[in-house]
Image 1 (cartoon, one colour):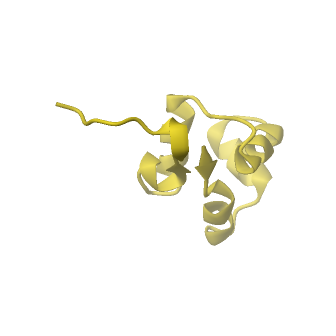
Image 2 (cartoon, one colour; image 1 turned 135 degrees about the vertical axis):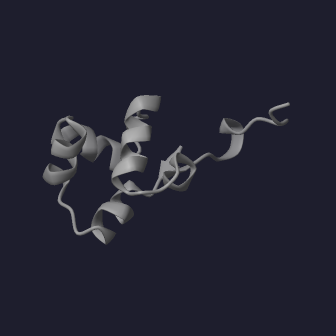
Length: 73
């Protein structure tokens, strides 16, 4: 799963440290998120979306086998 957290953070002129404090996580967590080495919990993904005033889907890009066929009925 790819994400645009680093891009958004830079757009918002925020350091990794500032973002980590807003989310109450370590700077290392932010580094891992930005590198795609850590997939956040739904709660953390929601908090990220709140910080950047966007939808969770705007931050995370699902590719290949991560996607499923079908829809919510």
